Image (cartoon, rainbow, N blue to C red; front, side, top):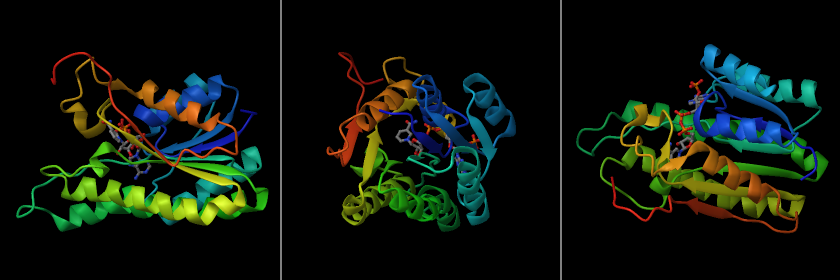
Length: 231
Ligand SMILES: NC(=O)c1ccc[n+]([C@@H]2O[C@H](COP(=O)([O-])OP(=O)(O)OC[C@H]3O[C@@H](n4cnc5c(N)ncnc54)[C@H](OP(=O)(O)O)[C@@H]3O)[C@@H](O)[C@H]2O)c1
């Protein structure tokens, strides 16, 4: 891959921070967002990427993030839509407002920032958009109504964008990780060393991005490949 200009949402920790680090190591320019000032500063110092405090559920923050990319890098070649979190609850005992708030980040935030980036990519005739969904968006599970629905939505949205953007040379790839050891959901059930690491997802994404531009990988799932028992 030639040197590219990355915008990574939610790059202050976890999978996003791993992508920021790998992209920088590969020589790319990177702007990333997050909300936690200290974490943003730490990743920025460690990687040399430009960190920005911006909440993806806030339209003005997304406008600021895209402006920062224009000013610092002159554009965006790769958008990694990674910012997200999980609210889980069983139907019958579900806080619909909490579900709506989560959709503001996982779904509407992702749509809003991409809506601002796509005109830039169209004018370049080139771009990559990577949407981080989840295996929770591939198979329903108990308590999965809010989070699973948001990730099913991301998969569906990705297919729509593929149909719309392929003619413009813009590739859209949807990535569905299984459980990854990050602070996601307070690390619940993810402290098993046999589960995936953030770097595993980052490496997979970087590999997908290095395919010839003729080749589009529309969706990929990543599971831990372990010859062992569940938990
Ligand atoms: N870990 C897993 O098992 C797993 C599995 C499948 C899919 N995923 C998906 O992978 C993505 C990354 O998760 P992760 O495991 O790396 O979680 P994480 O360690 O909790 O990191 C989440 C990142 O997203 C940022 N973020 C959250 N809400 C945001 C918002 N409204 N605006 C801007 N940034 C926001 C956080 O920033 P701050 O901390 O600065 O607020 C943080 O940098 C998510 O979309 C998640 O759904 C995770």
